[in-house]
Length: 586
Image 1: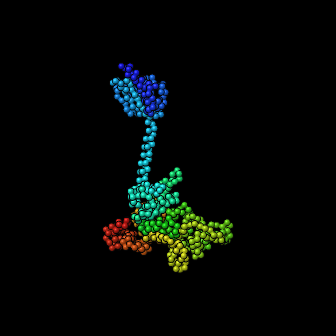
Image 2 (image 1 turned 135 degrees about the vertical axis):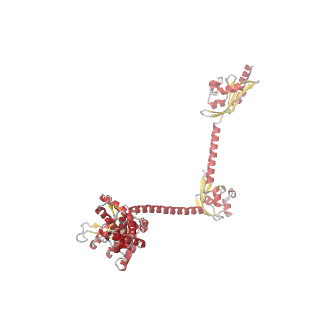
Image 3 (image 1 turned 135 degrees about the horizontal axis):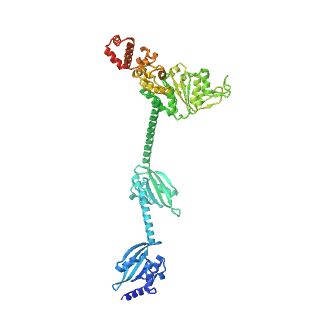
């Protein structure tokens, strides 16, 4: 029976039979095995897919042809269970295989394997999936744009509108898509259309468009040409000008706020730097420093006023160090110390042979030496009228001529001036030019005398006693009583006088700790009437405390015992001790 079945199977697939011709015409590969696993048929499509010789395969055992697939086919013939949709990846193709048993008269006579090359289909599917992904991405980009997008075809028919366009214009896409722009303009939906302008001029067009809602929008239409050079689409970008204007105003406000914050931070840093350089504690001097910081970054003229020794030079130098000119020279000229006969040549320089004794080469003046930097004219009130005219030229024209010369010299300097005199009173007396005063007095800064800012005296003492200790290799300190005495003096010479006292004490004192009685005689012997620092202070309590302290000191020095001192003051001994302790007196 088995041999009959097998011979019938071989007859069916005989290469010369009509059935073989039909099977060979199939696009799918077909292979038939007999019960022993011998290949009895191998159609043309199979040889094409596997790139093998059709005749050479027939008659071979399948384990020799496809050893990796033989176990699966053997299992099909042993179990009679088909394998459907098996995917195989070959070196040049991907195939799907269906394997089924051949049953004749209830018996398995062999197996048939039908396989299809799906490489082309997979390529098509992959391309289709790529197009679908691209479409989704483009669609998401189109809809997520913050700008409105309006697309029309080459016939001005609306093709597509995004959500942003609906939000900006208030128009619904269902009332626009499929409509012609000519009709929409005629209906008054738009006053005119960028799309129509593009179709007419065949180039990009931008315009402001007014909507019925009252909004004004910026519209830019861009043509998209096909291979034939015809306009296929017009893509219009829409932006709400109202929102842009609002954003621009907010941005400008933000920039101004940032600028103010930055300027405040910069001024604070400069303020801290100046406070480190200058000993400042009183509110009066804090105000002075704040004005100096504010004016430092500009190029305007500054007039510093105050008594001699208040620190005008130090403040001028600090302003220079905080300015944009800090890398350039800082030149100080004291107009009161240079003789009248030399002041002009010192300031403006001179040409060779300008006067007897002049250098043969000529000489540049101090103003030229300050080129690009800061020129500090101290004691400007001492400058004679003739030179005030030349200085005014430097300020207004940035030019001058040397003594004995005719060549105009240009100079770029910032001018800071200082004086201890009343320039306004000098103007009334004709001693100072009014026009020069107003050019110098753009920003006036008045430094108060030391007696009007006594809070600054202790920190000044601490700062400079340390400097003098390092300078002279000493370790001097002051008792509270000595500090009180120094703080109570009037200092007609201001900070300069205080520093002279401190350096003198550092060098001359034999003690490490300096007490009140160790102060120089000229300080200890100062009479109460001479102490402007006590009576001239607009603070009654401080003045009374100073008077009480002075009387206690005098009584203790003039009487041999505390009892007699107390009696001379008309107070009890206990009161004397309590008050002496209060003022730090021994």
